[in-house]
Image 1 (tube, protein in one colour):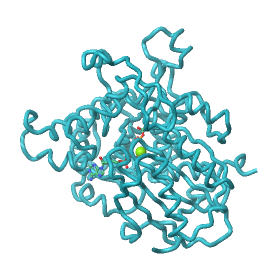
Image 2: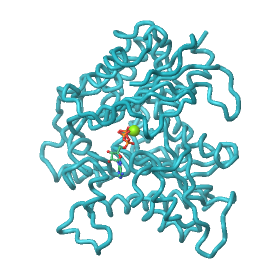
Image 3: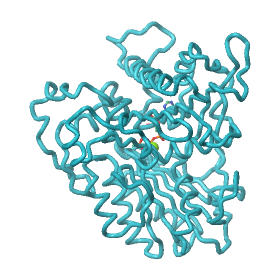
Image 4: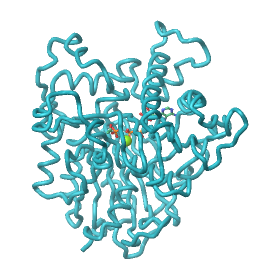
Length: 455
Ligand SMILES: Nc1ncnc2c1ncn2[C@@H]1O[C@H](COP(=O)(O)OP(=O)(O)O)[C@@H](O)[C@H]1O
Ligand SMILES: CC(=O)OP(=O)(O)O
Ligand SMILES: [Mg+2]
């Protein structure tokens, strides 16, 4: 096991990203609190991920960065080690802390700030220091993000207990979407009830979209406020976002992260009446004993959040396996190949959003960006979606760049091969990009630059 190269007395910031089926944790040295264009105020020391938390055995990875803050694909630390003792986000974090203590030469006392990705922040628009009040605010929103907020709170509790020297700060996925105009974020329901109960589109994956916007702006040498993008964040939970002049215009998730694109265990958008025909217990409250907080979710929400998506269609939550068995080179046989049905269904739903967002942006789109585990790794999804974009004037997918994506370097990779008519788009727009999103870095960066959190 290599040791982190950082032995300087700079403060450290830990960033924790509790996803629906994963926990991703990165540790950074904080170099500066000043904004300098193109320079990161933090440097990565190590990163760890625990995946498959909802489809055991969970898999643990732990990698130490080199002196340039880069984790190479060849890093020899732990990779995808199955760990039976990990059954939820709290035990995943405990495993990480044990590992940090035993294997990495890090003094926990040096960790001064811990940034937590909290998926639902309601009307909070800025990050908040964890206090009794903010903790309870996040707890009250747990029913609106049943796979997420409780998991984040369990890790926040573990940090308060095990790293008492550090201050915990919550960063919200919903914050990025606060600028959405009311005619887009409102549902066509009674507005008195909607306002009283906060029933509107909040949108999620906002930390990822903020990171992608900044990274693509850097890549295209433009200001974020000059960019119109359609971004696909395709992971265990999947969403799309239309970004207009650097602000969220629309996104596919809604009041909760259930709406929109289907995911590993989530149905995505359905006719809301469907669930009452699926089960006659739809309205019954279920008590999820595994959840770290008391959840009041209905059987309907339980089924649509945890018993649907790729898991229901194919039996696996891993889209790589779905793709491998989809037999993409033959005509579809949906009756006999559930994997092909799942693959084509995802493509169909992505096309719905991309087409709609293209019109909402008046066809003025700088780039379509793929991100998340599926967007960054599935050459098949990128090839098929990329192919469909050509009719809108996007560059064609360069097959070699697309196939070689895993081995390529950089945060943003351009897949474009010029227009089919031979015109090379260059910096004019309608590019096909992949962005290796990093919610942990987004939080650590924002934290380092927020002087109010360091006074
Ligand atoms: N080569 C691949 N092809 C298609 N999908 C992949 C591939 N590798 C990983 N994935 C998918 O990416 C998902 C994880 O995405 P990620 O964004 O890391 O998840 P999370 O939502 O937990 O943060 C996995 O569940 C798997 O379905
Ligand atoms: C909001 C959401 O679904 O997040 P994740 O994909 O990390 O589960
Ligand atoms: Mg995620």
